[in-house]
Structures are given as structure tokens and as C-alpha cells.
Length: 269
Ligand code: DGL
Image 1 (cartoon, helix red, strand yellow):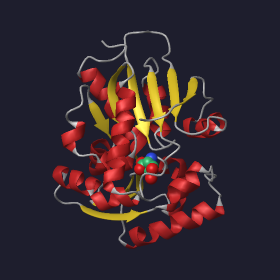
Image 2: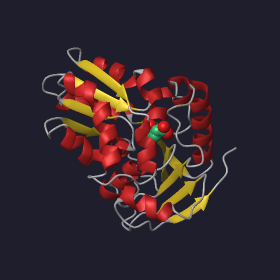
Image 3: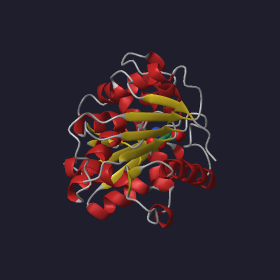
Image 4: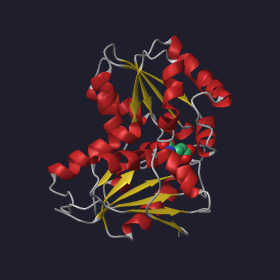
């Protein structure tokens, strides 16, 4: 048993889709969240910059009393090398392996699409992870650089015309390939779940990477006897690197519940 918090970070608010699921399936755990809202997006930056930012995010969380680091960011997950993540003093989990496993398990025909940021698609991390699980699959990727901006600006209503047009444009090449499963390889995209689903005619299995990593965290904590043993609800502390004024409103959209924890504005070294 371990009552320390779970540390979760993202370049912005997308990682809250993982926190939402953690609240559902591990309600007694404390969570410390970091959203680097002052520097989002990471996905269009160089590999060196993404690694530098990710190290600063992780260092911030390691300065807190946490038992695990969760990279709830597709861009960091697919860019941070194992030489760094594997040397942390506590367990590190990212979204690639959990989402890859789920996609391989769900895909009947083995035609799997991946959407994410430029950096995520360039790394081919999801493709490599899936091929090591299932040799018969075909992977089709398309970067969707506009979507993080649309989501961070709250343009997520299922009938939002601008966002629908953008998703439609990005899905076109994947629809042509007749994919049967699609990994939402960026933790912002589950907010656009209904739009993706409708444009894919409800025929493609959507893999929500935020949800997958949360379930993976629960399995990991159970298997390693690291679950909290309190019976009261856990608390959540939110840390962001930009203004906090609008945080409650935007974050509650991601969390699909009211923000109840403390919200701090912090500086990253
Ligand atoms: N949530 C991040 C991801 O999953 C957002 C991308 C970005 O910062 O560009 O990749």
C-alpha cells in the first residue's frame, strides 16, 4: 500500500482526460496534475525542446510526494527516450503502450489508424509498439496539428462546424485506407470523440489514450501493491504554468465534473 499521490502531466489540459478516468476508477487516490499551459502545444516543437520541457515537468512532479509519474501527453510519450524515463526513481507510465495494446486487442482486420501531433506521428512510436504486439497489422498515421488549438480554445461541441471541418480533413486519408480502429494518440482528442465517431460513421473503434493509460495505472498499482489504502475520496491538486482565471471553466469541460481541488500557478525551472 502507498498513500502518496499519482503525478500526472501534459503540455496543457489534455491530460485531464486521463485524470477524469482516474477519478472514476481510482476515487481514493490523491493526484497531482501539472499542465504546462504556458507552453502548450509541444507537438510542433523540436525533439530537443520537447525532451527539455518533459524533463522540467517530471522534475517538478518529483519534487512532490508522488509514487508514480504518468505522462498523459502523446507528444511526450512518443518522444521521451527510455534512457531518461527508465532511470527515474519511481515508476513512469506513458500512453503509447496502453493504447497500442488496446488497439491491437480491438482491431478485427488489423487496419489501425493513428492521429496525434506532428512530433507523435514523426516518432512512429505507436506503430512500433503495435508491430511488436501484432505482426499482421497495417498502421496508417496522420498528424492533426490544428486540433490541440481548437480543443484548448473550447471548440469541442459535437456540432462545431470549424472543428468538424478540421477533423474531416484529417480523417480523409485514413477513411480511404478503410481503417477499422483509430488511436486518438493525443490526450486532447477524446474531447472530440463524438465528432470523430460521427465522421467515421460509427464504424471504427476509437481508442481513447487517456482512458487506456488510466486503466493501465490501476493495473500497475494493483499488481505492485501500490494502491492507497484510504477509504475516503482522494484529493487532486492542479498546477499550471499560465493564468488560473479560466482554468476552472475549461478544466471542468475536460473532467466532465466541477474542479474541486486547489489550483496553483507555478514556474518551471
Ligand atoms: N496532449 C498533448 C498530446 O497528447 C497535446 C499536444 C501538444 O502539446 O502539442 O500530444
